[in-house]
Image 1 (cartoon, one colour):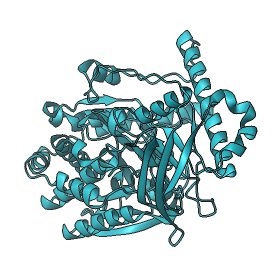
Image 2 (cartoon, rainbow, N blue to C red):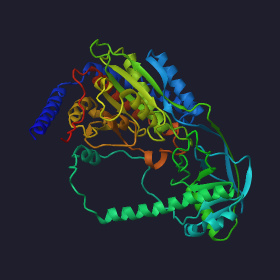
Image 3 (cartoon, rainbow, N blue to C red):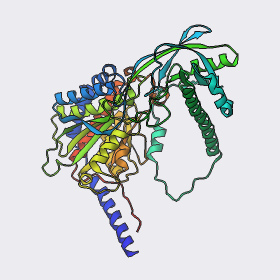
Image 4 (cartoon, helix red, strand yellow):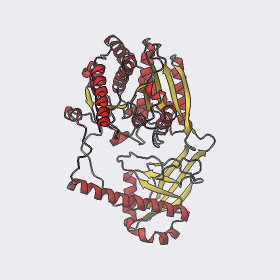
Amino acid sequence: MKRLSFVLFLLLSVASFGQSSVRLEKPDMAAVNQIIAEGMSNSKVMQHAFYLTDVAGPRLTNSPGYQRAAEWAVNELKKWGIANARLESWGEFGKSWQLDRSYIAMTAPYYRPLIAFPKTWTKGTNGLQSAELMVVNLADSARLDALKSKMKGKIVILGRDDVYKHSFTADARRYTDEELNKMAAYEMPIASQRTVDTAAERRQRENFSRRMSAFTMAAKLKAAAEQAGAVALLTMSMGHDGTIFVQGPSSRGAQHKDSADAFTELVVSMEDYLSFCRLAKAGVPVNLEIDVRTTISKQSLDGYNVIAEIPGTDPKLKDEVVMLGAHLDSWQSSTGATDNAAGSAAMMEVMRIIKQLGLKPRRTIRLALWSGEEQGLFGSNGYVKKTFGQTGALTGAHEKFQCYFNIDNGTGKIRGIYAQGNTAAAPIFRDWLAPFKDMGASTVTLENTGGTDHLAFDRVGLPGFQFIQDPIEYDTRTHHTNMDSYDHLIGDDLKQISTIVASFVYNAAMMEGKFPRKMTIFKQ
């Protein structure tokens, strides 16, 4: 008991000392002002974004489009004089997939082109096919085997009775002061607190259960259609107004070298899909023609990240590393502008700004543009595992790591930062954000945020952070959709992002002390 008390006292003392000492690490305002001038008045961020989107195209991991973007990024970084710019393997990813042709139209009861997009790692249709549409309803699940004999040569869909609900709110929005103040006031919950089971939570569970029933039926229908020799399966996009939310097949690991090529499956616009359902319900036959061609290759299975550095200049600290990153890969239906060419272009611009200004960081600044994020943070997890080891492993690489900063929430400008439960980091971030209050960035929240590459660092005890960004139209229009193009980027916001991140990265590289870790209390 005495030993545990001593350990608790020691940990609390270290945390207290870390917090009080790092508060004195004020930003170098001369350097910050230089960064602001370069980042806001001489920005090249939209040029980077153009090459990563319009020129490179969709950037599915291990696809020709990803390779084009990654090689362009490496070459551009080398032109700026950034050191050690390279492609670095993080391990085996799986098969390459590329869409070569996609055409689908309704031919009866009349001709109409359709808005649709194939899922990744699906095979093609072996040329142009004409087929009758077959609708299978949720209530047919018990007799799915009996219906299988009718699916051969058909294009199959799961019947739905959804009703389009008009929205009278804008797709794009920014955080309100009230929302940001709520984030800033967030307090870490006590683990022992028990949450009351509310009626709203029960309704949420019921809705989830209904969705899972439909999801299970859709998976069974897909398997039955493939076994029966159907031409293709169509599923409905959750978007509207022609927006297609589309990713990969429902089965994870479809890219694995030993997995069979996925059955041909396309996501169709909600408006077209519901029209099919109404026609079928009225007994009106629907015929379609479809031609999907894909290239699936096992020639190269590894996944690659883009890595580059600005070497540190302090003999005592140059082996320590400050990292910044964003994921370079995207899904297939557009050019992945807000997800996440925006982040990749901004992080490249950070490196350009620091190099262009001739700043001399004490620690090494290392850029990483990740691949495989969309399939499960593969690139960042693979890098962290190879470089820093597993959770809790206090290796020399851990000791030489300062912190990591990530951008992956669309085109919206930075409004602050998630401290990820790191109470000692919060006052540092408040000081570092102070010069950017007039740019709309001042909020520090202890909240955790998930879903992107900073988690690869956070889960092994290394300081990893994602910035708070205005949502704009990310979840409503661009995230994983056919609308995620260059046109949906906001240049002024990306300038602001690049400038703030450059300041944070430089400040972290210049600190006297070690960036604080989250305090962890180990049980005796």
